[in-house]
Length: 105
Ligand SMILES: [Zn+2]
Image (cartoon, rainbow, N blue to C red):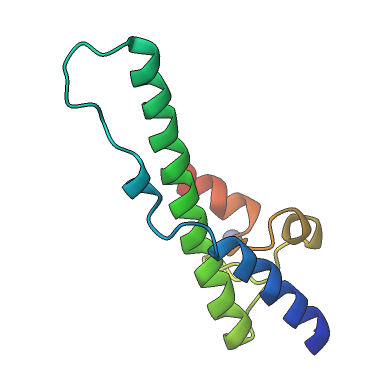
């Protein structure tokens, strides 16, 4: 891989990690019982998003490690090459589609 491409990718990943470090910190549940259901649901949605975000940040950090190791683009689990379309859509991918589905399910 060209160094230039690698640097661009690194910059792209660094942008993503620039998101708030602890997204959970900004989510606070109301202290009063009986607050509006809509508000409660909204908060739960926020927590869901925060969890997804922190899971993604873990992958981004691992992807950066893989860049350093020279294993970027290779599945962490089974060692097959991750398709370039997948890497373009999700540059922080550290698992191939099959292993990612296995991990999620
Ligand atoms: Zn795999």
